[in-house]
Image (cartoon, rainbow, N blue to C red; front, top):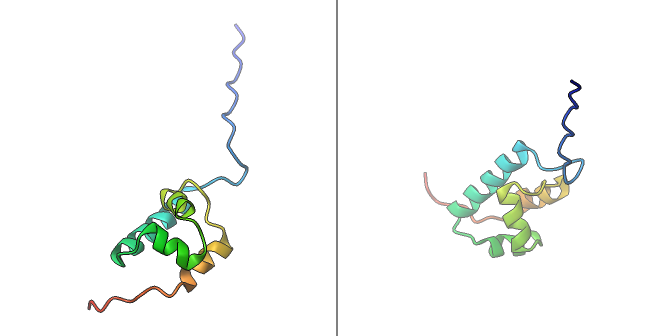
Length: 82
């Protein structure tokens, strides 16, 4: 009896999202929540749509370095908690 190997499931893209992308997205969501910002508010600050912010937060899309630089350079309001 000859057993054929199952073909691997194709990925959507060669460089699809990784667990790191999901982790970074979760951190963005947590920070946005702490600041009381909506996805729309954050999107406006970093020049992206709220749909793209949503995809980043879920880890559905990779966060390109140039986009991540915009997140870190974004002038988030600071909290006064100590």
